[in-house]
Image 1 (cartoon, rainbow, N blue to C red):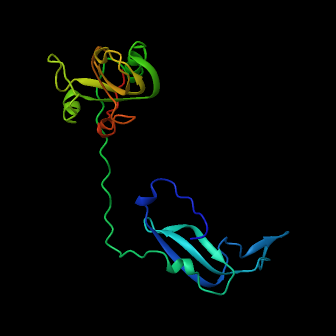
Image 2: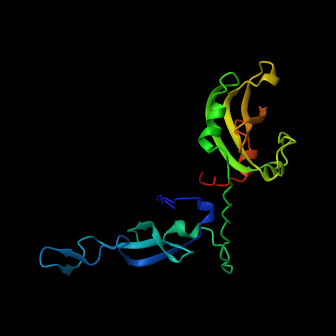
Image 3: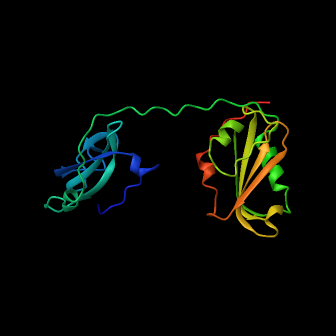
Amino acid sequence: MTSTTGIMGDPSKRYLWAVAVSGDVWPNYRIPVSFGHPFITSPTPYPPYRWGIFLVEAVPAQLFGVGDAGVTEAWPSEFDKLPNHPVTAFVQPSPTPRLAPIAVGIQQPLATSAVMKLSAEVRRIDRIEAKLMTWREYLASGDPGAYKPATADDSAPVWIVAVAGEIVPQFGHGVTFNWGVFEIDGTDGGITSLTARNDGPWPALLDALPDHPAAAP
């Protein structure tokens, strides 16, 4: 379509009906228009468009906006170029269940600060994020760097803190890595392990990990 329509969110997950209308079209709802006092309706001073393409959200079936409009007599050629998918029955999406809060000994700011204070190993921070989960959930990620201390209970909390920037761990003997993942014991705040790699600018495993809310202290 020749004009631009802004769509918030992921446009690949929103479905629209494009409805083309030919005739006398006022896509900006400019008829009737009130002028002066008292307010009485009078014909709009603007000439009508000859066609318009209206966008209607398939869910929840309401007008979204006007995609395009024109004053030529010809049918809008861009409408014929649009795809037309077959209609299927609507299935209500299942809401994502909210994760249960986990009781912790330290809150997220302290877990993040513990990593930021490691100036010898964390030389530069471009991005830092923390997620809260149980040791069992972290090990279930299948990442080869996931490690649980032998004394830690599977249901105990752990903060997984990912950092992108310049990571120089002691085991690297001076080698700089793009990112590191720190395991912070959610009970006492101890740093139990560090994984550092150069496969990409950010650890992809973090996006797949759960993130429980921390129970209020």
